[in-house]
Length: 179
Length: 168
Image (cartoon, rainbow over all chains, first blue to last red; front, side):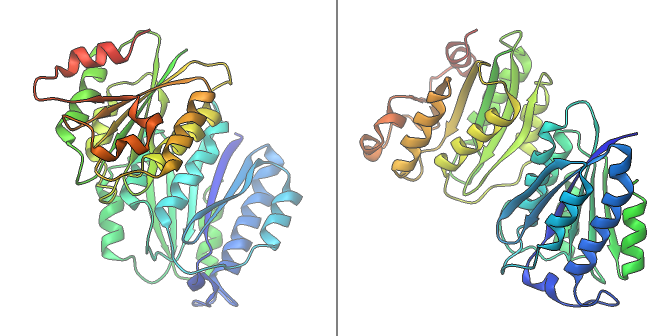
């Protein structure tokens, strides 16, 4: 069944660093993971939107099923600035799905888990909850910070998943599980 | 279908009892009939909490569950969020009413007046419920905001105020 995916990618400086087998960077691994998802789902009519975030959210690509356009958007993107406003990234990604009326939808966030500013993550998760949008947060790290975990859990979103990913292979298989 | 956007401050400055009561009245009355409701929360920052829906009962719950959004209310940012919500969810001709709950704890810049006028230019009717009994002296520097204000006094009946503000 065709679905609308809204992907939020963390482009803070720390995403430019290597981690485990994610070489040269976590961001590069994230781009490859999104490209893999796009390749698999767009042929069936599913659409993908992309939001970036560091200290602010940046809506990069509205919903599209044009694989080449998605790929071009991914190729050009690089880590940008200091700060990581995860809450703003989630809110912007949910907003991107406002055009998705009557379709199955999902927000996927790729981050290394640092939160330094912006909208509280709990408030952002509440917005996803009250719009009925399932949310999956993929954390490229060895552990999830305690306060982030608490904020996410206390929102009580029934369709929320937080996944810790330590290798590129695990990241790719998590993306394939979204199909 | 008319959209009613509640734009409610969530800071340490706002009287949350008034804000919650207003949303509870709306949820209880589910009025006016045939209206949709949406909720935007704001403080230093602003975000939509509930996109347009006919599930009025979730408005007070969503507001209550939201953490405080900093100390100073940025009303201009809140109104910008409302403009974005209206533009991305409604057709250009859909009627829109906006009820703002504001503590008037800090003086907004001219940007607030400009954003309010932009919202009105989109055809929205805007009312501002101020959670204090009288406007601060500096309100004269924000004439567009000033003329929309309804102050809340000790004897204000929120139910009657809601009926007066929100008419089909």
